Structure formats: structure tokens, C-alpha cells
Amino acid sequence: MFWTRSYWLPPQGSAFSNEVDVLYMALFWLSVFFFVGITGAALWFSWRYRYRPGRVTPHNTHNTPLEIIWTVVPLILCVIIFFWGMDGFMKYAVAPGEAMEIQVTAKKWLWQFEYPDGTRSVNEIHVPVNKSVRFVMTSEDVLHDFFVPDMRVKHDIIPGRYTEIWFTPTIIGEHHATCAEYCGKGHSDMQAKVFVDTPEKFADWMATGGDEWKNHTPEDWGRIQYEQKGCETCHSIDGSKSKGPTWKGVWGSSVKAKQSDGKEVTVTVDENYVRESMMVPGAKVVDGFDNIMPTFQGLLRENEIRGLVAFIKSLK
Ligand code: CUA
Image 1 (cartoon, rainbow, N blue to C red):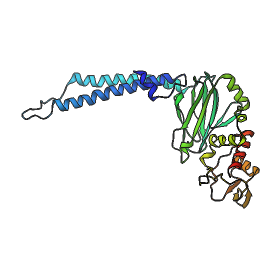
Image 2 (image 1 turned 45 degrees about the horizontal axis):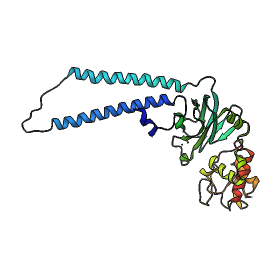
Image 3 (image 1 turned 60 degrees about the vertical axis):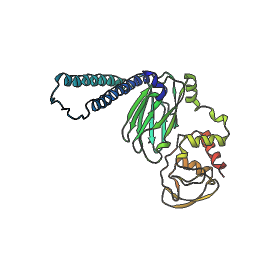
Image 4 (image 1 turned 180 degrees about the vertical axis):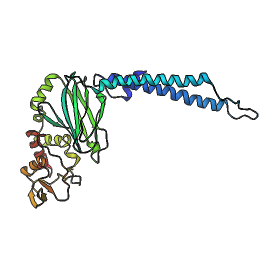
């Protein structure tokens, strides 16, 4: 009966995903069995004992064997399901001691990851294959929820508190993570990529952040950052108004902005202003917009900042 699994569940990307699936499918088929049995019996009885002139309904108040059966059988099933679920929950809740720890900070509307050596990334995590990884998660604003379907993990992220999940990835390649708790208008943009790498590729990524940027023109690389780092959540590139100013035609223009001390100033959009706006977004907030952008200090590598600047320049 488990052949249906591959149709409606994602690939089993982590060591415990098979166990999760087996329990899930067992519950599913148990429900199918009782659904068909109970509705089938109800339909059968309503036909079999339908109204007929002259038929008298017998007066039954009790059937002790039947009542014992429909009490004891579900009780046994519930106890089995409880202990089966608890066994899985215990494994799922406690990470092995040797697990690598990644700090996850969720905020409106991006994911920030921090490795033990201080390496940081946005909306993108790399993990080594067949090694346990533990995620210690917190939020800077509202409730979010870290959900990696391929790994069969999902957990709420709560401001002012730490929650954790862990998994051991088994399939090399790209997996998808998403926010599974409605957290405002950018909720559906809160996506991340989980890359499961070979040990060599992972070591290389940790050291350099990868060399993917060499394969792109600065402009293209900037467009990729625009999509991956969450810029597109708030900045349009077609001139339409979003949560932040559009990037179209902004390069070289003069904009009115409010400094953090409340003073109104006119600034020219150049390398320095763009860079400052990424690192200290509240320094000069363009009139008509709220000071809601998170800082990207320490989150963007030099090649990524150069790319973004080139990309903004290209949006005439
Ligand atoms: Cu974060 Cu929904």
C-alpha cells in the first residue's frame, strides 16, 4: 500500500523521513479503512432497513459484545498510534550531540543563517550530506515557521525564544524550504534553498561562499542576488510601488529622504547611498516609505554588493 507515497509526498531527503512517511501512510490507510467501513455500513443499513409499510422497528436498547468491541478496538489502536508517534517524536526532537549547529533568524521577510564559524547567508543554506545538522531558530519580529518538506521537518519560530529542529540530509542537491506560518504580506516570498553538498563542496562553500559569481556578469549576478536575498519582496524593478522604492530608473536620481535624526535631505542615488541603504537601512529613508528594511551588514559578500550595484545601474 506504500506505493502511493511517491505520488503525494516529496522525496525522502533525510534519514528519518522514511519513518515519518510510514507512520503517516499507516494513519492515512487506517482512516481510509474506517471511512469506507463506517460510511458503507451507514449506507447499507439505511437501505436495508428503509421504511416499508407494516415493518415494525425492534426495540433494542443494548448489545454488550458490540459495545465492548467498538470501545476496546479503537482504544488499542489509539494506544498503538500514541506510542508509535511518541517514539518518532523523541528521535525528531533531540539532535545527536555531534550535530553541526546552524543559527536561524527569521524576520519579515527573509531567512538568515549563521554557521559555527560566523559565516552567514540569506535564503540559502549549504549542509554536508549524511551529517546531522541542528537548527537553532528564533525570530526578530513575528511568528514564522521553518518547513523543509523533503527533510520532513517543520517547526514554529517564536520571537524571544529558541526552538530547534535537526535532520541528517541524505540526497545531494537542491531542496526547498519555506515559511509555513502566515507572517504578513511578504509571507509567500519567504523561501529558502537548502543545498546538500558533498563534503568537499561543502568545505569549499564554507571557505569562499562558492565561486558561482565568476560564471555571471556583475549585472546578472546582481539580478540573482535580487531574487535570492529577498530584495524583490520589497523593491520592484518595473517602476511599480511596493513596500520599498522601485529600483527602476533610480540610479543617479535625486531623492528626498529623512535621516535617522529626523532631518530632511536630498540624496543622489550612487554607490555610496546604495551601499549605506543595504548596511544601515534607517540612515536615510526615502520619503513615503517606512523604515522597515532589515540590515544586510555581514550578510552580503563583496561580489554580491558589486553585483547588486551593477544590476540597479542597469535598470534604466
Ligand atoms: Cu515568515 Cu510566513
